[in-house]
Amino acid sequence: MAKSSETEIKLRLDPGDAEGFASLEALGGRKLDRRRLHTIYFDDKERRLAAHGFELRVRSDGAAHVQTIKSGRGLERGEWETPVSGVLPDWSAARGTPAHKVLRKDDALKSIFVVDVERRSWRVEEDGAVAEVSLDCGEIISGERRQPIAEAEIELKAGSPKFLFDLARKAIRSCDATPCFVGKALRGRRLELGEAESTQSALDLELRPGATAMAAFQQIVDACLAQASLNEELLRRHPGDVEAVHCLRVAIRRLRAALALFAPMIAGAPWRALKAGLGWLSRLLGEVRDLDVLITETIERARNSFPGVSSLDRLRDLCGELRQAAQRNLEDALRSERFRRLLLDALEFTHAGAWISEEDRCKSKLRGMSVASFAAKRLERRLDAMTSRKNRDCIVGANEKDRHRLRIKAKKLHYMAEFFGSLSPTKRYCAIAEALHDLQEALGDIHDGVAAEQFVSKLLIPDNNADLTVAAGLLKPNPTSEADSLAVACVAHRKLRRAKPFWRAF
Image (cartoon, rainbow, N blue to C red; front, top):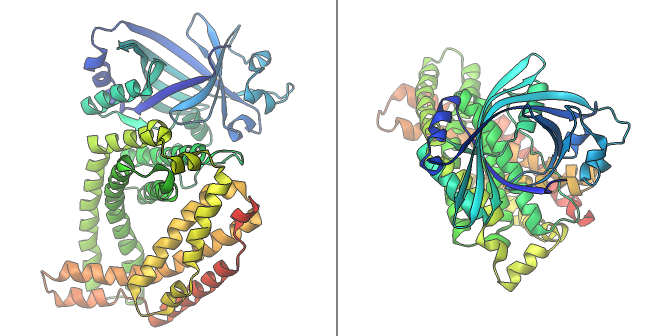
């Protein structure tokens, strides 16, 4: 059985950019190997391999068949390869792999989907480091469904992972090659389920109870990047997709929450640079998302409450123009080298950053601490701050800025709690999660109307348009709905104070 891990960076390409990648200077003069690959992915009827994070495939190149089992995601993944005699899986070849424990010998495996690609490969060597660069162009097939695929893989064969990142940076400078955190197996499963064009709102994450804080941080970031990849790809195909903007923004916010939660272990100049880059992307997504909410919810609610007010129609159209401009800015950003570098920096920081081997005694201790102990201390501190009397009083206070700050804290703690839900009894986790959700939603309902009025008022200052100024005033929530939201927020905060923190049961 071949090696039990692979270290690899994936780059997604638009089909039209494949030839640009093949012409990279780094590949010039290298021997080209060209093959046609036919790969069948298997699972049982309950999809237990996928549920446990495994892939089982048999790949044929016309001359030989190789069965491969993979696990995990990120820069380094588990990989076990064995030559087999045909296109069907060989149960005995799975012995000695973690997947062998998931399936019983008599479990019937069936073909789930097929990947047909032309693969072009180059062997790149430099100063003792060796990488195999592959370019796959073809399609994924599941029944009647088909999806084109064009992706590059840079796999380390010898040397430091730094060599992979150097090659990847050369690629993203030269063509629209975007670091990608979604493999062919996940694409195929989504195609089979009819979800290839669906947004990804949930975080696919299940931490192991015995994991270290360092391993948990890496797994959390990998899950956030995978969610971001799926929604960014969808947004590239459908630039005006409102839900894709929202889900990509959530993925980036989760990633920023992870950086904040694990700050004592990872903080430093690279951490600050990554935070700044994610802040840039988050602001662009926020501009589009806030205008979506303003147009489809706040202005629409006012139009329903005050039918026949033509200035509200004019205000909707004006904000629609601003939304289109913000969308163009976001599209430009997602196609920029800056965005591609940001994703690659996030991957490198997470799996090859200097913090991993930093000799600081305190940080070293935190890296080796169990994730349960690390999370419990960090979440407890944030919950204590959330449930203080000061924060309780600010809910019904007159200062909207204080309420908004509390909402942001609730949202951030909600994201952080999500990371560890798999380690906790469901009932305890849900009590905290639901209270945080209700609190942030109730405070959000109040803030959306106030923020909309302020935003529109600033927008109208240059024109001093009386009709539009009146329309802006109609965006404020009415006193009854605001009172209802405040009541919900107070109840949610009280539930949060009384809930038993789920992390105490780790």
